[in-house]
Image 1: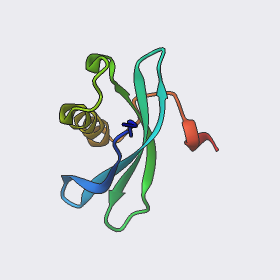
Image 2 (image 1 turned 120 degrees about the vertical axis):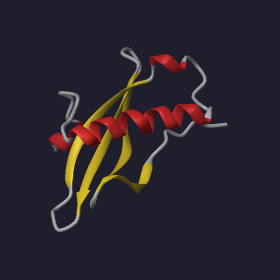
Image 3 (image 1 turned 90 degrees about the vertical axis):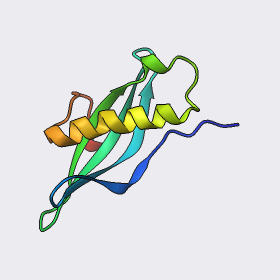
Amino acid sequence: MTFTWPNFDEPKPIHGNISWTAIFESYDQRNEVAYYLMTLLEDGREPRHIMAQTDIGWAGDDWSSPEFALRIRSELDQVARRGDSNTRYLGSLAR
């Protein structure tokens, strides 16, 4: 079976009229981190894009468990609640 990185296409509420989505950007095997392009959504405002880094070293070799996606979602939620990127990596944002 081929592994597919989880995406979070459905808006996840933060509070009030603010929510986020995230799509997988890339994986840095050497540092065991994944990068996600996040979109911060707020009613009446233009969507804002930021890059988020998530640690996946804790998962070992089993990325197929439901816990894997839940933990990534939790880490992304923390970044969204801060409202700022947690990495210098820009990925597709640099284009």
